[in-house]
Amino acid sequence: MFEGTVGTDGSLTHKHKSGGKCGWAVVGNQNGQQVAAWGTMPASLPVQKRFLRAELWAVLQALRHCSPPIVIHTDCAAVVQGIKKAASSAGRQAPSTQIFGE
Image (tube, rainbow, N blue to C red; front, side, top):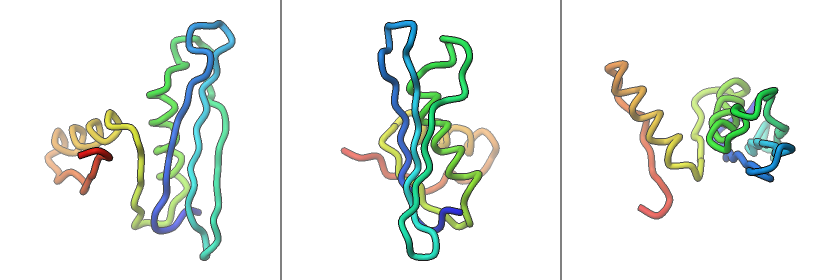
């Protein structure tokens, strides 16, 4: 279980080749020790192999395996914007966000 603050990332290699693969990773803490989880995307169709899906999958894994409250750091502005939009559509206050470079 991740606690406190975690970092997430997704990646895509060989974007324009049939063997392209997506990967994801989450790094955080558990009982004061650094822990990490990572893997390849569970995708069987080429259309499922997109870097944004990998970024979202990493955030989903952090949420699935966390002990709230949690702070998630991501370098993907589209993920942050999507979370803000979803919260707004649901009539809830968006979580506090800060995008690198702002």
